[in-house]
Length: 333
Ligand code: UDP
Ligand code: MG
Image (tube, rainbow, N blue to C red; front, side):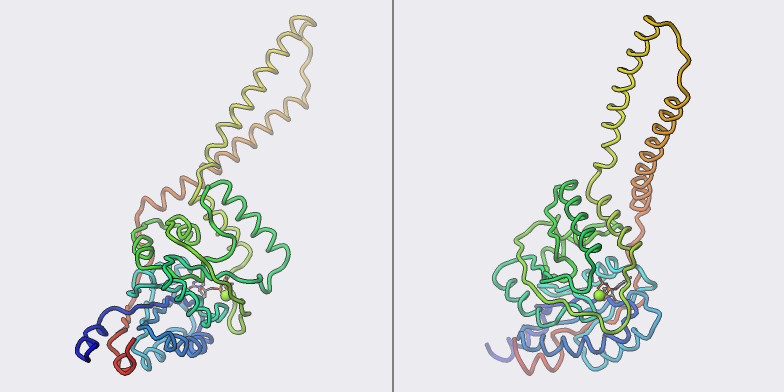
């Protein structure tokens, strides 16, 4: 390849984009990028890193800006407030330009050393490559049990083969990213969407580090909401199950009515028990409230979707000059 053609090639879009959502990660982003940059350089492909500042209230934006001043292959998508990790990731995916896009956390729990492995699987022809934790580090038995129960339920109810592990740390081919970008849904359960799109998939394992700086943003309540959102986004079975419950209850009631009638005809009218009345009323009332509540969950979600608000609002976009930086010209891909 002559140098003119080489330059031509180099102004093209980068091969690899790394998308990193960051929410109050001021103490992490610098260390994270210092660990990531040499790994990316060693891959030999052109790259960019897209940081999404998810409305951080600490000095994350300043730290990111410092990184970008030194390295023009870094882009920052600055959101107008905190939109949550899945929306931040979506913002990053929409702004990534690479042929392959890796999504990873800024807290160094996803080791940069795994990125070349993901890339190798992609170059071998896989379109979705998950990085899967070898052990769930730092999580109690209760958490592990509920996580497993959730994935079991999810697979049974939605018939989408979502894997237990893997999801947040993954490589996606351009075609997959384009499809995800087309999905307008607001309740973004990205892990489920990754499974929904299909494509040739594989996984590599990694050892999850422990977060040393900053705090995890996942409380128990948030996890429960996450699980409910995930189920509601991928199955309507909870809505339909009430037809079955209703049919069963009516069936049994009808049988009971017949029994009572026969009893009255044979033995005359007796004074009905207070207990059986109150039990029936409370039981049916409970079932009705429960089914209404579940209906409400779905109606609420329909309302959210129907408003069609954007998933995130970008305050400012600091674009990357991925493949045109001096470094790229010095060491061709
Ligand atoms: N994150 C985000 N927006 C949020 C919460 C988290 O962008 O509202 C980012 C966070 O900065 C980190 C990643 O998502 O890069 C994972 O967050 P965290 O470490 O809290 O999750 P965990 O590792 O505990 O699952
Ligand atoms: Mg983390």
